[in-house]
Image (cartoon, rainbow, N blue to C red; front, side, top):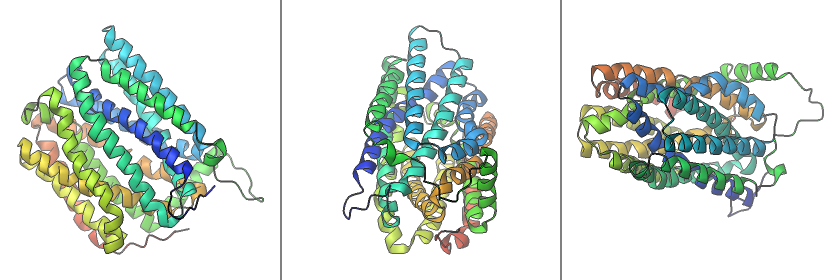
Length: 408
């Protein structure tokens, strides 16, 4: 079902976007409260990094089968299932904190389940975007979704998560569940038929799920440009995970940021990301999507390195803002590239396959970051930033001349 109004992105897309606003508010609360809670339960850098690793591990384990499943089922149903799971977990954490019955092991399990739900939510949401928008509106649509994430998650949810946590440990998690309930009510307003999987042709022969998974893997590995783009993103993503997995300790103990102000420091990066999301379609139109991608991955990698080289809270904030600007541009234009290159009827499994590589390596990066932080809290930032900058520099020519037309 494709809505093609000239000026509007369509009622269905707007309903999806409204649900994303509520969901991202809850994500912001969780994004601040979860690491603060982990730092309350332990001060060991490796144990802290395990939380980040468990959040990303489901991408390595489940992204391909979940992506294949999304190609087969109604995507509205998938999104509702995810949000319902998040409500249950958020309320469970709030109750355990209120009754002083939460320990680190249980917290790890719940983090892993939340990470698994994110795999399904991200895959389902990204799979419906090219269903609802024509190719000339993809960048506008992805920009709006990115803006929803930045504004509600980083400007609203993130600072409030730190404030709520400093008042009552359970408060951000209870509020988190309420936000996901609002998202459910908004998704229910979307007609079920609007987010169904792509219809099959009359001569289509149903295949076993395993066969379709193999088909998605073969598609990705059979197209060199698409594969190289994924591998470049994988390398840089591993480095970012390495640097940031113990960032809560770096901010609290090296930059001496108070716990209640931790979320506000993250807002600085959100300001840059907001500006980046607004600028992405314009920069792409003026300089071309490929050249903009090449520039932004380099800038973001350099900013990662600078955050570690200069352990000063003001410098950290400036570099975080610049990094947020460039990474927001990269995310929007990269997803628009994937939407344009990959046929929608197999988008779910290709999305799952590439995320298995990109996000599946992040748990490894997170654990490496925890080990490096044992040496010094700056070390993960410096090592991750250096490697990411090297990968980005070696990819400039490829990204700058990349053809973003459909590859199959």
